[in-house]
Each structure stands twice: as C-alpha cells, then as structure tokens.
Image (cartoon, rainbow, N blue to C red; front, top):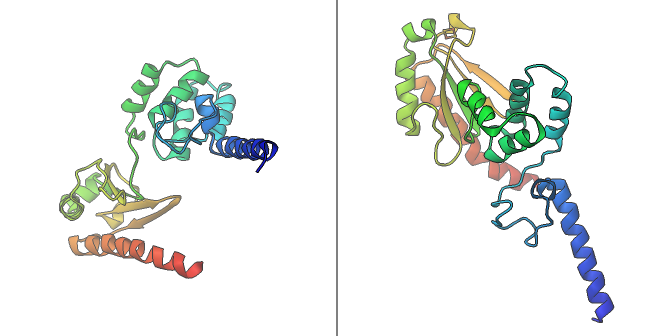
Length: 217
Ligand code: FES
C-alpha cells in the first residue's frame, strides 16, 4: 500500500470516527475528537457517552417557560432514565442555574433519581389503604427475594424497589406498579406468594430473551 492509500485510509477512518461520535453525541459532549474513538475510558468521557441533542432542544424550548428547571429535569430523566452528573453539568452550562441549584432541586423532589435504575422499576404503594391491607408484608417479601432495600437496585440491574404514595387504585390494595421502559403494569390484591410469582415471571422472561433474540437472527 502506497503513502497515498495510507492517507486515504486514515482520512476515511477519521470520517467514520467523527460520524460515530456525532451520532453518539460524545464529540459534542467533550468538545474533542477522541483519539480512542470514545470507546475507552478517556479523561473526557470516562467511558460514558451521552447524546445531548434532544436535551439541548428541550433546554432551548424550556428557556421561555418560567420555573423551567423542573420541566428540564423531568425531561432529562425521561431521556436518560436518571440524572447523571454529566447531564446535570450540561443543564448548568446551558441555563442560568448552577450545578448546586440543580442538585438542590433534584434531591428535594422524590421523583428525581441520581442513580441508574434497574430494568424493572417496582413501585410499591405505601398509601393508607395498601398499608392496612398488608403492604408491609409485600415489601418484606420483595426485599428478601431481591436482597435490596427501598431505593436500591439489584446487582444485575434488573430490579429497583421504590416505595411510593397512593397509586390511585385503592380498591385493589395492596398494589404495586412495575415500570419496564415505557410500559407500566399494575398488580393488585397482592399476597407474598403472588408477588414472588410476578418477580420470578419477569426473571423467567429475561432468561428467555437471549433465546428469542437468537431465534430472530
Ligand atoms: S393506597 Fe395504595 S393505591 Fe391507594
């Protein structure tokens, strides 16, 4: 291969890297074209890549709305599932809010999460009707089965447990809602046995998933 060919190959590689970074948003985020293709744990990206394009659009629109910070944080959490440090920094850079202010709001409201959650978010109702109908027994069952406390996530990132206030279907107490991606399913009249069935059903589905993916290929 001659010098010209080598230069051409390098040029092509650079274009591909730049394109990939644009798609991932990484180059936009760190402001550099990462020499490691942003796949390594470099000091700019720490191995994490965030696409900020949707967030930036939301910030632009929300700038016109009074009390916009909560709206921006809600949207950011919808996009990323939680509020990583990098996202908070980005919001601070693009608004008049300091990171301290943003953390203040994000930690004040229970709806915001600063840590990633599991694939299945278990929201266990602790409202009055559920409380008197045995929510504590259900909570104990979930905690023992998953070996986590309220607000924690299992090591395999499959389940997060969150105790929440009334879910609005008190006639079905005790109730839990499980959010998986955009889908939410409500389970009522829970017993410890039924709760275990539901959790194990989801585990079973997870085990099946790689098999289903293989079949689809
Ligand atoms: S108290 Fe649990 S759904 Fe209302």
